[in-house]
Amino acid sequence: MSTTRTLGEPPAKPLKVIKTDAEWREQLTPEQYQITRQHGTERAFSSPNFDSKLKGTYKCVCCGKPLYRSEAKYESGTGWPSFFEPIEPEAVNAFEDRAYGMVRTEIRCADCDAHLGHVFPDGPPPSGLRYCMNGHALVFDED
Image (cartoon, rainbow, N blue to C red; front, top):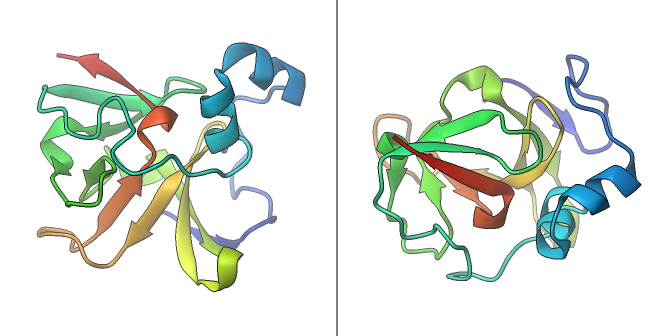
C-alpha cells in the first residue's frame, strides 16, 4: 500500500483523471457509479469476474489504469475478486475507513480516486494481504 490517509483528505499526488459528477454518471453504469464514486459495495458473488481464471490485467473501470494481474488473484471464498498485491504499489491509494462502526482500509485508484474495495491482513503469501475488490469497479483485459 502506498499511503494511508483519513477519508476526506486529498490524494498525496494530484489525480490524473478529473471529471464532474455528471461526466462520471454518463460514463458509468448505475452500479459502477454507485460503487466507484459513492463508495458502495456489490453483493458477494454478483461480480462478473469474481471467479474468472483467465490470464490478464484488471483495470480501473473509471480510467483504465492497470491495477492487478491475474497471477496475483486467488480464491478467498468471500465472493469478491481477491488479490494478494496490486500490479505496482503506486497503482492504488489506501485510506482509513471508519464507516458502519468498523475500522478498515479502503483502496482507491491512484489516478481517478475510484473506490475499489478494501484490503485486509488475512491474505496468502507473499504479502499476507487480501485486496478484496468490487468486480464492477474493474474491467478485465485478457492476455
